[in-house]
Figure 1: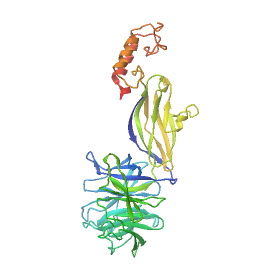
Figure 2: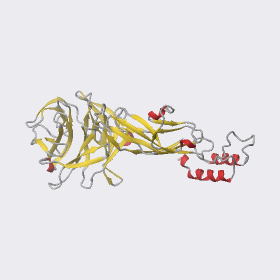
Figure 3: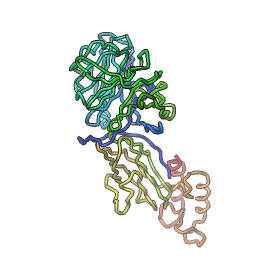
Figure 4: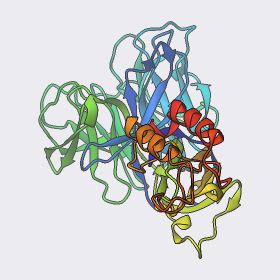
Length: 419
């Protein structure tokens, strides 16, 4: 059986809240192959394994980078566009992202954030809007807070410079409290602070004093355990904050580096084969690898018509099985996948009958040509020495002749079944 995988993501969003969440991150670098934008990946925090999820296009020509992520209601995301330079005419921006459609909408922050240095961004259930950390442009320190309307970037309330805070890069939030991590504090005491009165008269208390880490990036707070997780070692490792101590987590697979980090409810995307095939009489499987927030439901279709799940129960699973394949199995297959965030229809997967895999060993090579040539020379299908079914009669016309050879050679040369 032969497959090649590709990924696609377009979902029809539902208004149903997701029951679980996934750890999603913005991968660094923010430009790939010279194209402006950022890849979002979904991470298994226990192992560091990850899958590509979505590419978000944005302008990187003015040093803007998607560093900080947060989830929004309705299975959406928001991200601040970090920049390490700029002028008053080059306004600070953020974007909202609809993972189901891939659409990203860019907003400019209102005053006074428009001409400020922006880092942390978090949707705060406590405020029902975005909580953003910012500072004076060029100072590389965020010691001010603002509540921002996620719908248009307008600033609802903001503070001046807050005494006792050096750099509140990480903001995490629940319905009852907001927390930030001041990793640039000069002493260990007070690096993690609880905002007791965010705005307008900001007040905070210290509740943890972990050791200083270097080359850290964004953080996220688990939606049910409230455990804080963030990236360290220049974004290549996950670290958990447990009480007043750090606990090293998994190193990201394949040398990945990340910037923005968030727990989010995500509609499904899929990694799909671009085609599948098996020899006549063999069993083929087509797998829809869903990336997003489970659980998922699956429904396979053949040329747009639901596969009979009574005759083939695998039609309601992630892996469609096609046994005893013959010409009737040749079709385009896709899968309708649903979760609490929406419905995703995968790309079509063409299934081909691999007649060129003559010996049915899963590879197209010289052995297939030799076996075919041997049986082709036994021109009489009625010969008792012929295998049952006369396999060299590829066009199934009851005789072995030049037409069968003409059918075999293009299939062999094409090598689709061997890719």
